[in-house]
Image (cartoon, rainbow, N blue to C red):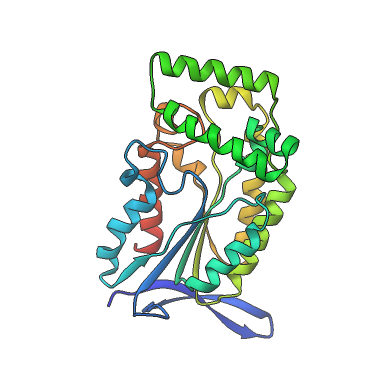
Length: 277
């Protein structure tokens, strides 16, 4: 059975301090190492032409042989701090699954990118606004990988919606940080669970041009979140730093928000290096 590193604790005059151990991680049930991923729309690779190229699918394929022991990827949990009941929902999923390893992929979408969906929710309330937003997302998914007339119609419709309905953020930087801080505190209650927190990433292309304050806000978000992560003795992965060796077109898809297969591969390699060096 291969060893995987996790954190335990010393207790002394200075209080609780971290001690990194190499130990055999065996799940609380069925003798499996269980991995829980808490993320957003981009984490499972569903926006890629081939979802199997996503970093989560890559971990599911490539991590078990490195560990050389039974391994299970638990059902993926989406977490948006601005969704009503999100904290209670994710708490239930953690309690029910009792993972050995948890990866949190933080997103800045709630505060960094004003969207038509955010405006609809503010105008119509959560349920009605969310209903319309889902239809927009379905169209986005088709248009993202379309060219020619379909793409032109999509771009024109989006421009009209932006000017007639308007845009708004779903939340604020402060509220988003509060939500993730609460999640980190919840994860810290399970002292034998290894946790990796991944920072948010910058927009690209047209989205970068349309949201001039996003980069500064995201950097601020990552700075505060990384400090919180370190204070809980969890591991921090700076995903924005992973883009350094990549060309601009290799980082984000055409919408400027969702990552390319190349970027997903970079994330997977970084996580494999952390979890199974």
